[in-house]
Length: 158
Image (cartoon, rainbow, N blue to C red):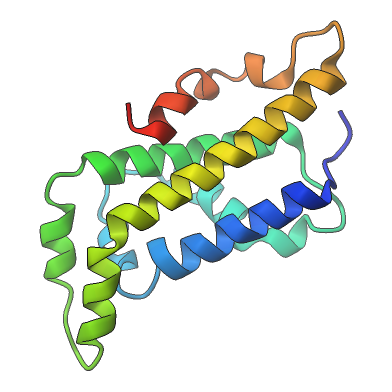
């Protein structure tokens, strides 16, 4: 499959990046997120998907790279959901002058994390449909990437 330049995919990736920067990794929550047990390569993949959109907008996306970026984001979702003391760490964020904004970021984190997961799942489903159509009689790309075997469970929280 050539590079993906589909307008729907690009809009969805932009939406994922905007949501991530605004609601998941904002100035209040980023210090706590960085304390999670997530390796550097996972953070790098997340950054490419959520913050480096301009690099790919016109040249297109490689399908296998997009799948790996989705898998990295799904690992973050799983770790953030399963970290029992993340809320306590978030409540210990210095208040400063923006107490209301911090409190909103903390109280809405779980629902914003779910929106992030839902957007990632939507992107994954669109890509797998495109992948299956392009593969024809050959195995689709996603079936060859081990990180994707449990992607649904990670994103749905099961």
